[in-house]
Structure formats: structure tokens, C-alpha cells
Image (cartoon, rainbow, N blue to C red):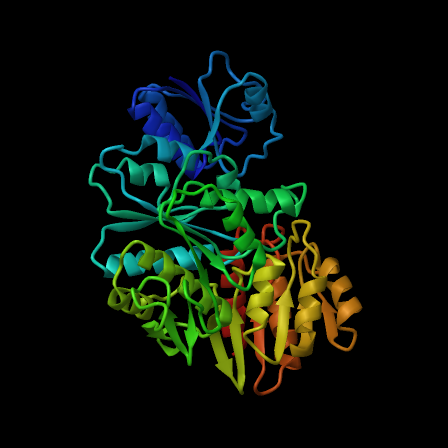
Length: 465
């Protein structure tokens, strides 16, 4: 097989490396020379027989006699290389599709798949922790953790994979069939990549195709239920809802601050099985509890016991920059939710606190903020805006939160902007308030990534306190 790997980042290298080891002739292409580590990887694969072409112009022309193109998830379908592949009838796979096809058909571990606009990483990590607590050899892969191709090719087989999938990854996935899957939520995001919400939601819905046991959906988000209804699944697969309310039969939910299962027990018509208490979780924020319910549902679909679900959820602690308290002083709590990179995520975070001094802004990615502001304006003490697209949020605040004080900072340097924001927030906040960094935007206008943004915020808070 002659394979072109489009993009030589983490997933691109994993694809090129494993295809080379399997005997394919690999040509890897990337417009960026990358750092020293990337160039070392290129040299290594070159020694093994791959053809690695890095630098400007490398991806303009698709080589001749190609059998398949394996693309990195961030590549738009309109990219010239991919357009040429389509014109020539050459299959285009993502790394996830490649991994699915590389599974050992006689000893393939099942996939428990998670997608959605927000909460994917936390849910997958929760799920992985539950599976490990149950004594299974599990690993979090896909859009988080280990590249899935590497996991599938591991000589020591896994029992099960907890798979995080972005819409970009799902766009290039056609044959995957998970044991169980969830779409956590659907909200406006990546409209700089998709022509409309319809196409974005359709890619999310691909996760349900071919599901064997359970399609898990969000009762509070009708769009996720509709995606389940439209999916072509294995006969006998069940639709399982999760809800912050009292669950109906076939759902998991909350009864008097207890997470319960009315889906995976024989007596579900008349009773519910206790999974854990809300107080057992690292956070009682509504979106965090929803993530826990979704993870529990996937684990239960795989056959994990109630006790393992309970112990796995109790012992789990989320990564940094997700509703993380970074300081408390004079009655004010400072919270870093830099991972809230779109309006839906920021809204979920804001709804967990009242009153709030909100720090927001960055790259809006084509998103609008009117619905967010309209839903949370009564919680807002003040708003401090930073970043390239702060005017988009300012416009929504003018329209729907006219009485709220809004401060726009035009400082270009990200660390300096957050330091100024922290100083202004300290002056505006009162005892009982939460100062919340929930940007609602991507970070790359001022920072390397959301982690660097959160670190800068936490450092500024600690200096101030």
C-alpha cells in the first residue's frame, strides 16, 4: 500500500510510524518544518523507509499512485491535497478510521466513544478511571491522551478503550462501530470550519453509527436525542438518557442528590440503583454532574458494577483549568475554567456561580454570545474582556446586560492582559463573589493554548493574593 499522511503532528506521526512498521510505503507531508523533536521523528522514519516532506509547499500536490490518504483531524475538507484525493477517487481516512481498520479482528477491544461540544475530555477521563477501578486494562485515547493508532497496535492488548472524538475526527471516520457512545451536547462551535450547525451536528452524530449496546444522549438537549433516532445501529442497541432530574425508565439521573441507574438493572420498572452521591464528586457544578452521569452510563453499558462506578467517580479528579479554584481571599473565590473555549462551555460554568465577575474573550471562532448573555446576565457583577474578539462579547452584553459594568482591555500581550484583568476584578468583586475565567473563546490569539492561559491567570491571582 502507498499511503500519504497529511500532517505530521502527534496523530500524523503515529499513523506514519505504524503504517511504516506494517510495510506500507508512506509519504508524510506537512507545511511546517516543526520543532527539533518533529525533525528528529522525520529522520527516524526516513531511516525506516518513509518519505517525510516538511516545509512550505509540501502539501500542494498529491503524489501519484496513492492508495489512501490519512489526514490529521484539523485539515479542512477543502484543503488542496484532500480535494485532489477526492477528485481521483482516493479514500480519505482519519487516524481514528485507520485505527479501527488496524484492529485485530479476532481480539479487538470494544470502544466506548464520547463526543459533544463540551465535556468530552472530563467524561472520557472519568470513564477511564471507572474502567480501571473495575480492574480492566483501559486507556483514554483519541482526542486526549495516547494516539489511538498506538493503543490499537500495542502488543499487550487492552480490555477496552475510552475514546474521545472531536467532530473533526468523526468527519473522517466511516466504519467505526462503538460498543456504546454518547453525544454529551450540541452547541454552536467551530463555525469557522463548518458551513452550518447542521453539518457540525451531523459529524457528531456519526459516533452513533453501528453502536452495539447503548446510544447515550442528553435528555436536556433534544439535538442529541434526534441524532440517536437517525442513527443506524445494531439491532437491540438501546437509547439511554442522562438527566439532572429524576430518571425515567431507561435513564440515569438524580434522586435527592444521589446519582442513580434506572437503565441497567433488572428492576428498572419499579426501582433505581444508587451509583454515588453528588457530594462524592469533585464538583457539584451541573455540567460536571452531567459528565459523571454520561461516564457512568457508558461504563454500565460495558457491564461495570455499581461499586466500581461509585469508586471510580469518587476517586476521579479533573485536570487543571476545568472549574479549578486557584485562590480564596476576603470572601472572594477565584476560579480557572480556561478550558471553556466556546459560549456553551462558558454558559455552563457561569451557571454554577452567583454572583460572578466574569473574565472572557479570545478567538470566538465565528460563535455568537447573545444566548449566553441573555441566560446569565442576572448573575453578573461585572465583566472584563480581553483578546482579539472581545467586541463580539461586548456587543452581546450591550444588547442583553445593559446594566452590567463592562471593562475592555486592549493589551495585546496575554499575560499582561490577564494580570490587568485580575487587578480590575479584585477591585470590582465583593465578599461572596466568584471571579471566573471562562473565556468562551479559543486562546491562540494571545497564548499557546488554553493551559497556558489558565496558568497565566492562576499566576496573576496568586501574585495578587
